Image 1 (cartoon, rainbow, N blue to C red):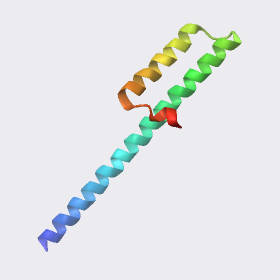
Image 2 (image 1 turned 60 degrees about the vertical axis):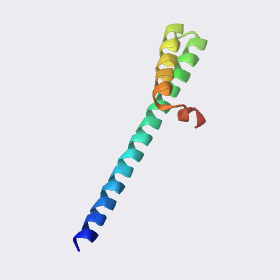
Image 3 (image 1 turned 45 degrees about the vertical axis):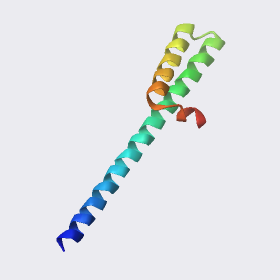
Length: 77
């Protein structure tokens, strides 16, 4: 009986761990999508004359940093 409970506890812990990993992946994906959106907005503002090249470069640097850390899955949309 104890072996059964140990296996059930192990499976439950594995499920919780996988769930947490999935949540982390989704949050990372959302953060990347937000950075990509900010880059687009900064570029659009720059092209329309209401933004600056510095803002576009900062947004690009933030996105590149995110990609360097987490990979480029955000670009595959």
